[in-house]
Amino acid sequence: MTVARERTKVLFIGGLGRSGTTLLERLLGQLPGAWPLGEVAHLWERDVRDDECCACGASFSACEFWQRIGRTAFGGWDRLDLDRVCRLKATVDRTRHIPALAARQLKPQQHSLVTEYADYYRRIYTAAAADARARVIIDSSKHASLAYVLRWCPDIDLRVLHVVRDSRGVAYSWTKEVTRPESGSRDQMTRYSPTRAALLWNAQNAAFGLLRRRGVPVRRVRYERLMSDPRGVVARLAEWAEIPVTPAQLRYIGDDYADLGPSHSAAGNPMRFTVGRIPLRHDDAWTTALPASHRRLVEAITRPLLGRYGYLDREPGSDVRRDSAFPRQSGDAGSEEVLPSRCVANPHTAYRSE
Image (cartoon, rainbow, N blue to C red):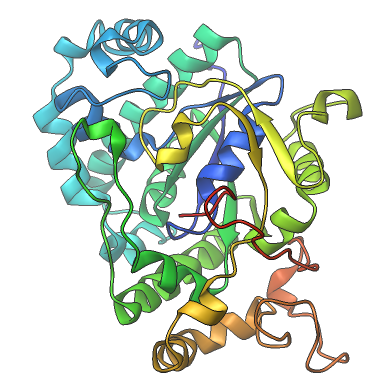
């Protein structure tokens, strides 16, 4: 008699970068029973191969947590066929493969490759859940293609948080220089032109909409809503993700701040290194800093989804509705509503979403 393996609960945070995904991971990762792993999609190259820093401050090879995970999942990271993982990633985990991954069935050869690749993640998730005694593992890898891959792994109980932010704010953020301290050098994070950012914003967000129609539980949350009611949003998302919490366990989140403890996020935004109290304020610098020509360009490219998510019925950077009778979009069922946002009082100290 075959005994079925217990499925590992995974909360996958998706969306285009610079949308507040890392912040949401940090907030949810403080909950009892939740364990954040960072952007596991980048673990193979940045950590296993390049030995970059874990969020705890130690190099990946010196982090006791990640070394335990490697031993449990693969018998040690030196036993992992890293070249094989990277080849599989290049073969199946790409945005251009989403139409095939979204199919009702995969061709036998493709199914074999996809499930093999997904199983590497399953091993890490399962090892981390056991090591941390966590009910839910959080992966903030963002990429829609990986979420589609994971849906084919029967041993992963997958739920997806789809984080969206106004495309004009995202495009502006991608033009800015952000240093990657974990690389041990002055390397900069990738930068995109407004046109490129707008196209990526369309592709990633549309993909998560289709994922919901493929039977994966998907919950949409707006960055602006998170900033206006962080404790309320986290409480509702915890309930949806089946992470039991009490009001007392949410006291680390205030109206405009959060107290963050250390974590072992393997890769991601530099703010994963931040420990202590951080201010929570909506970064709407794009409303004045993004050139008008770029704003019009980004809005033209992303207009259909901007309207669907409710951004075009409000004045940029405010909660003033252009049309109070603007109907709620049917595609937003189950998503968070946009509420008033706060301006950045001190751009040098307030957390920004990049």
